[in-house]
Image 1 (cartoon, rainbow, N blue to C red):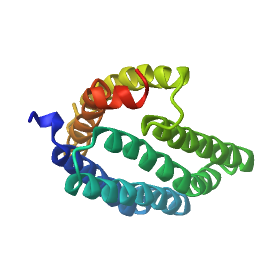
Image 2 (image 1 turned 180 degrees about the vertical axis):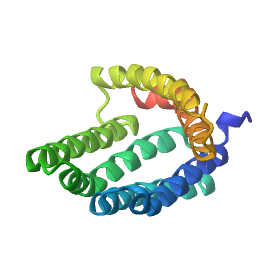
Image 3 (image 1 turned 45 degrees about the horizontal axis):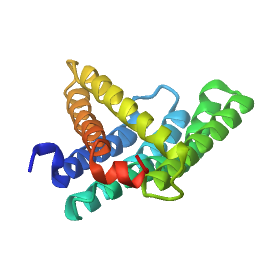
Image 4 (image 1 turned 90 degrees about the horizontal axis):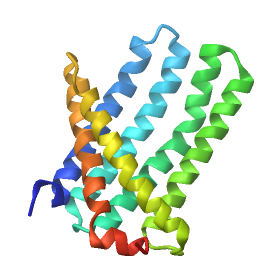
Amino acid sequence: MSFFDDNKNVGLALIIVGLIAIIAGILHPVLDDDKGAGVAYGIAGIIGGIILLLFGLKVRSGSNDKVAIVSGLLRAIGIATILAAIFNAIGFYLLNDSIGGAIGSLIISIIIGLIYIWIAQKIAGANKNAISKIIWVLLVVFSIILAILSLLGAISSDIVAIISGIAWFIIYLYVFIASLSSEVKSSLGV
C-alpha cells in the first residue's frame, strides 16, 4: 500500500491541520490589533479546526474507503464554512464597520458551504448524472492545483506555515489520487 493509499496518513494530515487551526484561532485575538474582530475570527478558526480534527481522527481510525473520505472531507469543509460564517461576518463588521459587507460575507460563506455539502453528496453517489461527471473533472483539476499551491505555501521561513502547507499538500494529493481511483469514478458515474 502506497503512502497516499493509506487513510492513516491523510487522517494524520487532517489532525495536524485541525490542531494548527485551533491554535491559530486561540492566538488570533492576541495577535490582532482589533480585539473584537480577532475574537470573532479566532472562534471561526477554532470551529473549523475542531471539525477537521474530529474528521481526521475518524479517518485515521476508520476504513480505507476513498469515496467516504473524499466526500466526508468536502462535507466537513462545508459544515465548517457554514458554522464559521457568522463569526467571520461579525469579524468583518467589527473590522470594517460595514453591515452590508458583513451580510454579504455571511451569505457568500453559507452558499459556498452548501455547495461543498452538495458536491460531497454527489461524490457519495447520490443522483448520478452529467453534472456528476463535471464534478469529477473539477475535483481532479482543483485537487492537483490546490496540492501545488499548498506545496508552494510551504516554502516559508515560518515553521507553522511549512507544516500546514505540507499537511494540506498530503490532503489534496490524496484527494487527487482518490479521484482517479475506480471507486470514486464509479461513485460519480465516470
